[in-house]
Image (cartoon, rainbow, N blue to C red; front, side, top):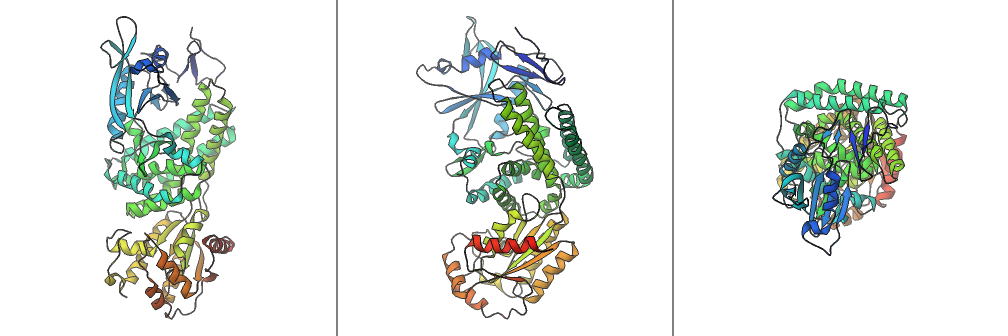
Length: 547
Protein backbone atom coordinates (compact mmCIF):
# COMPACT_ATOMS: atom_id res chain seq x y z
CA UNK A 1 0.00 0.00 0.00
CA UNK A 2 1.37 3.40 -0.97
CA UNK A 3 2.05 5.99 1.69
CA UNK A 4 3.55 9.47 1.90
CA UNK A 5 6.72 9.88 3.93
CA UNK A 6 6.14 13.10 5.87
CA UNK A 7 9.68 13.22 7.25
CA UNK A 8 11.00 14.86 4.10
CA UNK A 9 10.91 18.63 3.41
CA UNK A 10 7.54 19.96 2.31
CA UNK A 11 8.63 20.36 -1.29
CA UNK A 12 8.96 16.56 -1.57
CA UNK A 13 6.30 13.86 -1.56
CA UNK A 14 7.64 10.32 -1.67
CA UNK A 15 5.55 7.35 -2.66
CA UNK A 16 6.76 3.98 -1.39
CA UNK A 17 5.67 1.14 -3.64
CA UNK A 18 5.52 -1.98 -1.44
CA UNK A 19 9.28 -1.94 -0.95
CA UNK A 20 10.01 -2.23 -4.66
CA UNK A 21 10.97 1.34 -5.38
CA UNK A 22 10.49 5.00 -4.60
CA UNK A 23 8.94 7.63 -6.84
CA UNK A 24 9.50 11.31 -6.20
CA UNK A 25 6.67 13.76 -6.83
CA UNK A 26 7.30 17.50 -7.04
CA UNK A 27 4.27 19.24 -5.51
CA UNK A 28 1.89 17.71 -8.09
CA UNK A 29 0.26 14.35 -8.65
CA UNK A 30 1.24 12.03 -11.43
CA UNK A 31 -1.94 11.95 -13.49
CA UNK A 32 -1.17 8.92 -15.65
CA UNK A 33 0.98 7.59 -12.84
CA UNK A 34 2.47 4.35 -14.12
CA UNK A 35 2.11 2.75 -10.71
CA UNK A 36 2.74 -0.68 -12.25
CA UNK A 37 6.19 0.25 -13.55
CA UNK A 38 7.82 -1.81 -10.81
CA UNK A 39 6.22 -4.93 -12.27
CA UNK A 40 7.54 -4.05 -15.73
CA UNK A 41 11.01 -3.54 -14.29
CA UNK A 42 10.88 -6.93 -12.58
CA UNK A 43 9.95 -8.46 -15.93
CA UNK A 44 12.86 -6.78 -17.69
CA UNK A 45 15.22 -8.01 -15.00
CA UNK A 46 14.59 -11.64 -16.04
CA UNK A 47 16.42 -13.22 -18.99
CA UNK A 48 13.16 -14.78 -20.17
CA UNK A 49 12.01 -11.31 -21.23
CA UNK A 50 14.61 -11.44 -23.99
CA UNK A 51 14.00 -15.03 -25.02
CA UNK A 52 16.87 -16.44 -22.98
CA UNK A 53 16.99 -18.62 -19.89
CA UNK A 54 20.60 -19.15 -18.89
CA UNK A 55 21.80 -15.54 -19.03
CA UNK A 56 22.25 -12.87 -16.37
CA UNK A 57 20.62 -9.47 -16.66
CA UNK A 58 22.58 -6.59 -15.16
CA UNK A 59 20.52 -3.65 -13.91
CA UNK A 60 21.81 -0.07 -13.61
CA UNK A 61 19.76 2.71 -12.02
CA UNK A 62 20.02 6.50 -12.25
CA UNK A 63 17.76 9.25 -10.99
CA UNK A 64 15.99 9.25 -14.38
CA UNK A 65 16.20 5.77 -15.87
CA UNK A 66 16.80 2.04 -15.56
CA UNK A 67 19.18 0.24 -17.90
CA UNK A 68 19.12 -3.56 -18.38
CA UNK A 69 22.23 -5.14 -19.88
CA UNK A 70 22.10 -8.52 -21.59
CA UNK A 71 24.50 -9.86 -24.20
CA UNK A 72 25.41 -7.16 -26.69
CA UNK A 73 22.30 -5.05 -26.03
CA UNK A 74 21.19 -2.49 -23.47
CA UNK A 75 17.51 -1.67 -22.82
CA UNK A 76 16.83 1.71 -21.26
CA UNK A 77 13.53 2.56 -19.59
CA UNK A 78 12.62 6.01 -18.30
CA UNK A 79 11.92 6.13 -14.59
CA UNK A 80 8.31 7.18 -13.91
CA UNK A 81 9.16 10.34 -12.00
CA UNK A 82 8.51 14.04 -12.08
CA UNK A 83 11.18 16.49 -11.00
CA UNK A 84 11.06 20.27 -11.42
CA UNK A 85 13.43 19.88 -14.37
CA UNK A 86 12.16 16.58 -15.81
CA UNK A 87 8.74 15.00 -16.31
CA UNK A 88 8.49 11.29 -17.11
CA UNK A 89 5.29 10.86 -15.13
CA UNK A 90 3.15 9.55 -18.01
CA UNK A 91 3.62 6.79 -20.55
CA UNK A 92 3.23 9.27 -23.41
CA UNK A 93 5.96 11.48 -22.03
CA UNK A 94 8.31 8.55 -21.54
CA UNK A 95 7.66 7.40 -25.10
CA UNK A 96 8.35 10.87 -26.47
CA UNK A 97 11.56 11.07 -24.45
CA UNK A 98 12.73 7.69 -25.81
CA UNK A 99 12.09 8.79 -29.38
CA UNK A 100 13.84 12.11 -28.81
CA UNK A 101 16.82 10.39 -27.21
CA UNK A 102 17.12 8.12 -30.24
CA UNK A 103 16.93 11.11 -32.58
CA UNK A 104 19.48 13.36 -30.95
CA UNK A 105 22.05 10.73 -30.03
CA UNK A 106 22.33 9.35 -33.53
CA UNK A 107 24.19 12.59 -34.30
CA UNK A 108 27.17 11.58 -32.15
CA UNK A 109 26.73 7.84 -31.61
CA UNK A 110 24.69 6.34 -34.49
CA UNK A 111 26.28 2.93 -33.96
CA UNK A 112 25.08 2.80 -30.35
CA UNK A 113 21.43 3.87 -30.65
CA UNK A 114 19.22 1.35 -32.46
CA UNK A 115 15.44 1.57 -31.87
CA UNK A 116 12.55 2.21 -29.49
CA UNK A 117 10.41 -0.85 -28.70
CA UNK A 118 7.19 -1.40 -26.69
CA UNK A 119 6.67 -3.54 -23.62
CA UNK A 120 3.09 -4.77 -23.74
CA UNK A 121 0.62 -6.43 -21.39
CA UNK A 122 -0.91 -9.45 -23.09
CA UNK A 123 -4.43 -10.91 -22.59
CA UNK A 124 -3.05 -13.64 -20.29
CA UNK A 125 -1.62 -11.01 -17.93
CA UNK A 126 2.03 -11.46 -18.93
CA UNK A 127 4.43 -8.85 -20.23
CA UNK A 128 6.07 -9.12 -23.63
CA UNK A 129 8.91 -7.21 -25.24
CA UNK A 130 7.81 -6.08 -28.73
CA UNK A 131 4.42 -7.68 -28.05
CA UNK A 132 0.96 -7.22 -29.57
CA UNK A 133 -0.99 -6.30 -26.43
CA UNK A 134 -1.57 -3.04 -24.62
CA UNK A 135 1.62 -0.97 -24.49
CA UNK A 136 2.50 -0.29 -20.86
CA UNK A 137 6.10 0.90 -21.23
CA UNK A 138 8.75 1.79 -23.82
CA UNK A 139 12.41 0.86 -24.00
CA UNK A 140 15.26 2.40 -25.94
CA UNK A 141 17.47 -0.32 -27.37
CA UNK A 142 21.20 0.37 -27.59
CA UNK A 143 24.24 -1.56 -28.60
CA UNK A 144 26.12 -2.43 -25.44
CA UNK A 145 29.66 -1.16 -24.92
CA UNK A 146 32.44 -2.04 -22.51
CA UNK A 147 31.79 -0.13 -19.26
CA UNK A 148 35.55 0.04 -18.73
CA UNK A 149 35.63 2.51 -21.61
CA UNK A 150 33.49 5.07 -19.79
CA UNK A 151 35.52 8.19 -19.17
CA UNK A 152 34.37 8.46 -15.56
CA UNK A 153 35.71 4.97 -14.85
CA UNK A 154 38.94 5.74 -16.66
CA UNK A 155 39.32 8.99 -14.71
CA UNK A 156 38.59 7.33 -11.36
CA UNK A 157 41.16 4.60 -12.06
CA UNK A 158 43.84 6.94 -13.40
CA UNK A 159 43.56 5.56 -16.93
CA UNK A 160 42.42 8.78 -18.62
CA UNK A 161 45.60 10.37 -19.96
CA UNK A 162 46.13 14.00 -20.88
CA UNK A 163 46.87 12.91 -24.43
CA UNK A 164 43.20 11.97 -24.80
CA UNK A 165 42.02 15.53 -24.12
CA UNK A 166 42.78 17.03 -27.54
CA UNK A 167 40.78 14.36 -29.43
CA UNK A 168 37.95 14.78 -26.92
CA UNK A 169 37.91 18.55 -27.36
CA UNK A 170 38.05 18.09 -31.13
CA UNK A 171 35.03 15.78 -31.05
CA UNK A 172 33.07 18.30 -28.98
CA UNK A 173 34.06 21.21 -31.22
CA UNK A 174 33.05 19.26 -34.33
CA UNK A 175 29.69 18.39 -32.76
CA UNK A 176 29.07 22.01 -31.77
CA UNK A 177 30.00 23.28 -35.22
CA UNK A 178 27.33 21.08 -36.82
CA UNK A 179 24.66 21.62 -34.16
CA UNK A 180 21.43 23.45 -34.98
CA UNK A 181 21.68 27.05 -33.87
CA UNK A 182 19.18 29.62 -32.70
CA UNK A 183 19.48 33.38 -33.05
CA UNK A 184 16.76 34.00 -30.45
CA UNK A 185 18.21 36.13 -27.67
CA UNK A 186 15.77 34.83 -25.06
CA UNK A 187 17.00 31.27 -25.51
CA UNK A 188 20.37 32.34 -24.11
CA UNK A 189 18.75 33.86 -21.04
CA UNK A 190 15.32 32.49 -20.09
CA UNK A 191 16.19 28.77 -19.65
CA UNK A 192 19.27 29.70 -17.61
CA UNK A 193 17.23 32.14 -15.53
CA UNK A 194 14.73 29.36 -14.86
CA UNK A 195 17.46 26.96 -13.78
CA UNK A 196 19.00 29.53 -11.43
CA UNK A 197 15.63 30.31 -9.85
CA UNK A 198 14.99 26.61 -9.35
CA UNK A 199 18.35 26.22 -7.60
CA UNK A 200 17.53 29.08 -5.26
CA UNK A 201 14.27 27.37 -4.31
CA UNK A 202 15.78 23.91 -3.84
CA UNK A 203 18.76 25.01 -1.73
CA UNK A 204 16.67 27.35 0.40
CA UNK A 205 14.19 24.50 0.94
CA UNK A 206 16.81 22.18 2.42
CA UNK A 207 18.40 24.11 5.31
CA UNK A 208 19.32 20.83 6.98
CA UNK A 209 21.77 20.15 4.15
CA UNK A 210 22.82 23.58 2.88
CA UNK A 211 23.62 26.32 5.42
CA UNK A 212 21.10 29.13 4.82
CA UNK A 213 23.81 31.81 4.78
CA UNK A 214 25.81 29.88 2.17
CA UNK A 215 22.68 29.19 0.12
CA UNK A 216 21.72 32.86 0.21
CA UNK A 217 25.26 33.92 -0.72
CA UNK A 218 25.32 31.51 -3.67
CA UNK A 219 21.94 32.78 -4.84
CA UNK A 220 23.08 36.40 -4.60
CA UNK A 221 26.41 35.84 -6.37
CA UNK A 222 24.77 33.77 -9.10
CA UNK A 223 22.02 36.31 -9.67
CA UNK A 224 24.48 39.23 -9.81
CA UNK A 225 26.74 37.41 -12.26
CA UNK A 226 23.80 36.37 -14.42
CA UNK A 227 22.40 39.90 -14.63
CA UNK A 228 25.82 41.37 -15.42
CA UNK A 229 26.41 38.81 -18.17
CA UNK A 230 22.95 38.95 -19.74
CA UNK A 231 23.99 41.40 -22.52
CA UNK A 232 26.93 39.11 -23.42
CA UNK A 233 24.70 36.02 -23.42
CA UNK A 234 22.21 37.73 -25.72
CA UNK A 235 24.98 38.85 -28.05
CA UNK A 236 26.36 35.30 -28.23
CA UNK A 237 22.92 34.03 -29.21
CA UNK A 238 22.77 36.62 -32.00
CA UNK A 239 26.22 35.47 -33.14
CA UNK A 240 25.22 31.80 -33.35
CA UNK A 241 26.87 30.42 -30.23
CA UNK A 242 23.58 29.15 -28.78
CA UNK A 243 22.90 25.76 -30.35
CA UNK A 244 21.17 22.46 -29.69
CA UNK A 245 24.03 20.97 -27.71
CA UNK A 246 24.54 17.78 -25.76
CA UNK A 247 23.18 19.28 -22.56
CA UNK A 248 24.53 16.61 -20.19
CA UNK A 249 28.18 16.52 -21.16
CA UNK A 250 29.94 14.97 -18.18
CA UNK A 251 32.43 12.11 -18.02
CA UNK A 252 29.89 9.33 -17.57
CA UNK A 253 28.33 10.28 -20.90
CA UNK A 254 31.55 9.84 -22.86
CA UNK A 255 32.95 6.44 -23.78
CA UNK A 256 36.06 5.35 -25.60
CA UNK A 257 35.28 3.05 -28.51
CA UNK A 258 38.02 1.90 -30.89
CA UNK A 259 40.36 4.42 -29.31
CA UNK A 260 38.14 7.44 -29.97
CA UNK A 261 35.79 9.43 -27.70
CA UNK A 262 32.06 8.97 -28.32
CA UNK A 263 29.51 11.38 -26.85
CA UNK A 264 26.22 9.73 -25.87
CA UNK A 265 23.18 10.07 -23.57
CA UNK A 266 22.47 13.67 -24.55
CA UNK A 267 19.72 15.52 -22.69
CA UNK A 268 16.47 14.32 -24.24
CA UNK A 269 13.59 15.42 -22.03
CA UNK A 270 13.57 19.15 -22.84
CA UNK A 271 15.14 20.54 -26.01
CA UNK A 272 15.06 24.05 -24.55
CA UNK A 273 17.42 22.94 -21.75
CA UNK A 274 19.84 21.57 -24.34
CA UNK A 275 19.64 24.61 -26.63
CA UNK A 276 22.35 26.52 -24.85
CA UNK A 277 25.61 28.38 -25.22
CA UNK A 278 28.32 26.03 -26.45
CA UNK A 279 30.57 27.07 -23.56
CA UNK A 280 27.78 26.27 -21.10
CA UNK A 281 27.70 22.80 -22.66
CA UNK A 282 31.48 22.46 -22.33
CA UNK A 283 31.36 23.76 -18.75
CA UNK A 284 29.68 20.57 -17.50
CA UNK A 285 32.71 18.55 -18.56
CA UNK A 286 35.18 21.07 -17.17
CA UNK A 287 33.30 21.15 -13.87
CA UNK A 288 33.32 17.36 -13.71
CA UNK A 289 37.09 17.31 -14.11
CA UNK A 290 37.39 19.98 -11.42
CA UNK A 291 35.26 17.98 -9.00
CA UNK A 292 37.64 15.04 -9.47
CA UNK A 293 40.75 17.17 -8.93
CA UNK A 294 41.79 16.83 -12.58
CA UNK A 295 42.46 20.49 -13.31
CA UNK A 296 45.16 19.65 -15.86
CA UNK A 297 42.61 17.67 -17.86
CA UNK A 298 40.12 20.52 -17.68
CA UNK A 299 42.72 23.02 -18.83
CA UNK A 300 43.85 20.79 -21.68
CA UNK A 301 40.26 20.35 -22.89
CA UNK A 302 39.50 24.07 -22.72
CA UNK A 303 42.61 25.08 -24.65
CA UNK A 304 42.23 22.31 -27.22
CA UNK A 305 38.58 23.32 -27.68
CA UNK A 306 39.53 26.97 -28.22
CA UNK A 307 42.13 25.88 -30.77
CA UNK A 308 39.78 23.45 -32.52
CA UNK A 309 36.81 25.81 -32.69
CA UNK A 310 39.04 28.46 -34.22
CA UNK A 311 36.60 31.20 -33.25
CA UNK A 312 37.67 34.36 -31.49
CA UNK A 313 34.04 34.66 -30.38
CA UNK A 314 34.58 31.90 -27.85
CA UNK A 315 37.24 34.07 -26.22
CA UNK A 316 34.57 36.71 -25.57
CA UNK A 317 32.39 33.99 -24.06
CA UNK A 318 35.03 33.07 -21.48
CA UNK A 319 33.70 35.89 -19.31
CA UNK A 320 30.65 33.70 -18.65
CA UNK A 321 32.63 30.56 -17.84
CA UNK A 322 32.71 31.02 -14.02
CA UNK A 323 28.92 31.40 -14.01
CA UNK A 324 28.49 28.39 -16.28
CA UNK A 325 30.77 26.27 -14.08
CA UNK A 326 28.91 27.30 -10.93
CA UNK A 327 25.48 26.57 -12.40
CA UNK A 328 26.67 23.17 -13.62
CA UNK A 329 27.96 22.31 -10.15
CA UNK A 330 24.68 23.48 -8.63
CA UNK A 331 22.78 21.22 -11.03
CA UNK A 332 24.77 18.24 -9.82
CA UNK A 333 24.20 19.27 -6.20
CA UNK A 334 20.47 19.34 -6.89
CA UNK A 335 20.45 15.99 -8.68
CA UNK A 336 22.42 14.35 -5.89
CA UNK A 337 19.94 15.81 -3.41
CA UNK A 338 17.07 14.16 -5.29
CA UNK A 339 18.99 10.90 -5.34
CA UNK A 340 19.56 11.14 -1.60
CA UNK A 341 15.87 11.72 -0.98
CA UNK A 342 15.03 8.52 -2.88
CA UNK A 343 17.88 6.31 -1.69
CA UNK A 344 16.79 2.98 -0.19
CA UNK A 345 20.04 1.05 -0.43
CA UNK A 346 21.96 2.67 2.41
CA UNK A 347 23.73 5.15 0.14
CA UNK A 348 21.79 8.22 1.26
CA UNK A 349 24.57 9.53 3.51
CA UNK A 350 27.20 9.22 0.78
CA UNK A 351 24.93 10.85 -1.80
CA UNK A 352 24.16 13.73 0.58
CA UNK A 353 27.89 14.28 1.03
CA UNK A 354 28.25 14.43 -2.75
CA UNK A 355 25.45 16.97 -2.94
CA UNK A 356 27.16 19.17 -0.37
CA UNK A 357 30.49 18.85 -2.18
CA UNK A 358 28.93 20.04 -5.43
CA UNK A 359 27.23 22.88 -3.56
CA UNK A 360 30.59 24.01 -2.15
CA UNK A 361 32.11 23.73 -5.62
CA UNK A 362 29.37 25.96 -7.05
CA UNK A 363 30.20 28.60 -4.44
CA UNK A 364 33.91 28.39 -5.21
CA UNK A 365 33.68 29.16 -8.91
CA UNK A 366 32.14 32.62 -8.62
CA UNK A 367 34.59 34.84 -6.67
CA UNK A 368 36.68 36.83 -9.20
CA UNK A 369 40.47 37.02 -9.36
CA UNK A 370 42.62 39.56 -11.25
CA UNK A 371 43.97 38.11 -14.51
CA UNK A 372 47.64 37.44 -15.09
CA UNK A 373 49.66 37.42 -18.31
CA UNK A 374 52.67 35.12 -18.60
CA UNK A 375 54.96 35.32 -21.62
CA UNK A 376 57.33 32.41 -22.23
CA UNK A 377 60.19 33.05 -24.62
CA UNK A 378 63.09 31.01 -25.88
CA UNK A 379 64.48 29.51 -29.05
CA UNK A 380 62.88 26.50 -30.73
CA UNK A 381 63.35 23.40 -28.60
CA UNK A 382 63.71 25.33 -25.35
CA UNK A 383 60.49 23.77 -24.04
CA UNK A 384 58.13 26.76 -24.14
CA UNK A 385 54.98 24.85 -25.05
CA UNK A 386 55.67 21.94 -22.70
CA UNK A 387 56.20 24.34 -19.81
CA UNK A 388 53.17 26.40 -20.81
CA UNK A 389 50.94 23.32 -20.79
CA UNK A 390 52.34 22.21 -17.44
CA UNK A 391 51.82 25.49 -15.59
CA UNK A 392 48.58 26.66 -17.27
CA UNK A 393 46.26 24.77 -14.85
CA UNK A 394 47.94 26.56 -11.93
CA UNK A 395 47.67 30.10 -13.30
CA UNK A 396 44.50 32.07 -12.66
CA UNK A 397 41.00 30.86 -11.91
CA UNK A 398 39.90 27.29 -12.67
CA UNK A 399 40.41 25.76 -15.17
CA UNK A 400 43.58 27.83 -15.47
CA UNK A 401 45.19 30.02 -18.07
CA UNK A 402 44.34 30.24 -21.74
CA UNK A 403 47.44 28.98 -23.52
CA UNK A 404 48.23 30.78 -26.78
CA UNK A 405 51.00 29.36 -28.98
CA UNK A 406 52.61 31.14 -31.89
CA UNK A 407 53.03 27.84 -33.76
CA UNK A 408 49.25 27.30 -33.65
CA UNK A 409 48.48 30.88 -34.68
CA UNK A 410 50.89 30.68 -37.62
CA UNK A 411 49.12 27.64 -38.97
CA UNK A 412 45.74 29.25 -38.32
CA UNK A 413 46.93 32.24 -40.38
CA UNK A 414 47.63 29.94 -43.32
CA UNK A 415 44.54 27.75 -42.71
CA UNK A 416 46.68 24.66 -42.27
CA UNK A 417 46.02 21.76 -39.89
CA UNK A 418 48.28 21.59 -36.86
CA UNK A 419 49.88 18.33 -38.00
CA UNK A 420 50.61 19.65 -41.50
CA UNK A 421 53.92 21.33 -42.35
CA UNK A 422 53.91 24.89 -43.57
CA UNK A 423 55.84 26.00 -46.66
CA UNK A 424 59.05 27.97 -46.23
CA UNK A 425 57.19 31.13 -47.25
CA UNK A 426 55.23 30.95 -44.00
CA UNK A 427 58.43 31.70 -42.10
CA UNK A 428 59.56 34.72 -44.11
CA UNK A 429 60.42 37.82 -42.02
CA UNK A 430 57.21 39.63 -42.98
CA UNK A 431 54.97 36.86 -41.60
CA UNK A 432 56.14 36.81 -37.99
CA UNK A 433 54.78 40.28 -37.10
CA UNK A 434 51.34 39.08 -38.23
CA UNK A 435 51.64 35.95 -36.09
CA UNK A 436 52.69 37.90 -33.00
CA UNK A 437 49.88 40.36 -33.58
CA UNK A 438 47.39 37.45 -33.70
CA UNK A 439 48.79 36.07 -30.44
CA UNK A 440 48.41 39.43 -28.72
CA UNK A 441 44.87 39.94 -30.07
CA UNK A 442 43.70 36.58 -28.75
CA UNK A 443 45.47 37.26 -25.47
CA UNK A 444 43.69 40.62 -25.24
CA UNK A 445 40.29 38.96 -25.75
CA UNK A 446 40.97 36.48 -22.96
CA UNK A 447 42.27 39.17 -20.59
CA UNK A 448 39.23 41.31 -21.31
CA UNK A 449 37.09 38.30 -20.37
CA UNK A 450 38.90 38.13 -17.03
CA UNK A 451 41.03 35.09 -17.84
CA UNK A 452 44.71 34.63 -17.19
CA UNK A 453 46.81 33.97 -20.29
CA UNK A 454 50.07 32.28 -21.23
CA UNK A 455 51.64 33.29 -24.55
CA UNK A 456 54.49 31.09 -25.74
CA UNK A 457 56.52 32.32 -28.68
CA UNK A 458 60.22 32.78 -29.40
CA UNK A 459 60.01 36.50 -28.52
CA UNK A 460 63.48 36.93 -29.98
CA UNK A 461 63.15 40.65 -30.73
CA UNK A 462 63.10 43.31 -27.99
CA UNK A 463 60.04 44.93 -29.60
CA UNK A 464 58.14 41.64 -29.36
CA UNK A 465 58.90 41.39 -25.66
CA UNK A 466 58.05 45.07 -25.12
CA UNK A 467 54.69 44.63 -26.88
CA UNK A 468 53.58 41.78 -24.63
CA UNK A 469 54.60 43.74 -21.51
CA UNK A 470 52.58 46.71 -22.78
CA UNK A 471 49.55 44.46 -23.37
CA UNK A 472 49.53 43.33 -19.73
CA UNK A 473 49.66 46.94 -18.54
CA UNK A 474 46.82 47.90 -20.89
CA UNK A 475 44.49 45.36 -19.27
CA UNK A 476 45.72 45.78 -15.72
CA UNK A 477 47.08 42.24 -15.60
CA UNK A 478 50.02 41.16 -13.48
CA UNK A 479 52.88 40.22 -15.83
CA UNK A 480 55.61 37.61 -15.68
CA UNK A 481 58.12 37.20 -18.50
CA UNK A 482 60.09 33.95 -18.62
CA UNK A 483 63.05 33.23 -20.89
CA UNK A 484 64.21 29.62 -21.15
CA UNK A 485 67.97 29.26 -21.55
CA UNK A 486 68.96 25.89 -23.05
CA UNK A 487 72.22 24.78 -24.73
CA UNK A 488 71.95 24.66 -28.53
CA UNK A 489 72.78 20.96 -28.68
CA UNK A 490 69.99 20.09 -26.24
CA UNK A 491 67.45 22.12 -28.23
CA UNK A 492 68.51 20.41 -31.48
CA UNK A 493 68.14 16.99 -29.89
CA UNK A 494 64.66 17.90 -28.63
CA UNK A 495 63.31 19.13 -31.96
CA UNK A 496 64.79 16.14 -33.79
CA UNK A 497 62.86 13.81 -31.46
CA UNK A 498 59.47 15.50 -31.91
CA UNK A 499 56.63 13.52 -33.44
CA UNK A 500 53.19 14.90 -34.26
CA UNK A 501 54.11 18.31 -32.88
CA UNK A 502 52.58 21.52 -34.20
CA UNK A 503 56.04 23.10 -34.50
CA UNK A 504 57.88 22.77 -37.80
CA UNK A 505 61.27 23.59 -36.27
CA UNK A 506 64.26 21.44 -37.22
CA UNK A 507 67.84 21.25 -35.85
CA UNK A 508 68.93 23.59 -38.66
CA UNK A 509 66.32 26.13 -37.60
CA UNK A 510 67.73 26.02 -34.07
CA UNK A 511 71.21 26.63 -35.46
CA UNK A 512 70.01 29.70 -37.36
CA UNK A 513 68.19 31.04 -34.30
CA UNK A 514 71.24 30.60 -32.10
CA UNK A 515 72.92 33.37 -34.11
CA UNK A 516 70.13 35.89 -33.37
CA UNK A 517 71.02 39.15 -31.68
CA UNK A 518 68.52 38.92 -28.84
CA UNK A 519 69.35 42.26 -27.30
CA UNK A 520 68.82 42.85 -23.60
CA UNK A 521 66.40 40.28 -22.19
CA UNK A 522 64.25 41.73 -19.44
CA UNK A 523 62.34 38.49 -18.86
CA UNK A 524 63.32 36.29 -15.91
CA UNK A 525 65.92 33.83 -17.19
CA UNK A 526 65.29 30.19 -16.33
CA UNK A 527 67.57 27.22 -16.86
CA UNK A 528 65.46 25.17 -19.25
CA UNK A 529 67.82 22.23 -19.69
CA UNK A 530 66.20 20.07 -17.01
CA UNK A 531 63.08 17.92 -17.15
CA UNK A 532 59.71 19.45 -17.88
CA UNK A 533 58.71 19.01 -14.23
CA UNK A 534 61.88 20.71 -12.98
CA UNK A 535 61.66 23.64 -15.37
CA UNK A 536 57.93 24.04 -14.85
CA UNK A 537 58.37 24.16 -11.08
CA UNK A 538 61.00 26.91 -11.41
CA UNK A 539 58.77 28.87 -13.80
CA UNK A 540 55.68 28.53 -11.64
CA UNK A 541 57.63 29.76 -8.62
CA UNK A 542 58.51 32.93 -10.53
CA UNK A 543 54.89 33.37 -11.61
CA UNK A 544 53.38 33.09 -8.15
CA UNK A 545 55.99 35.39 -6.61
CA UNK A 546 55.50 38.12 -9.21
CA UNK A 547 53.36 40.95 -7.79
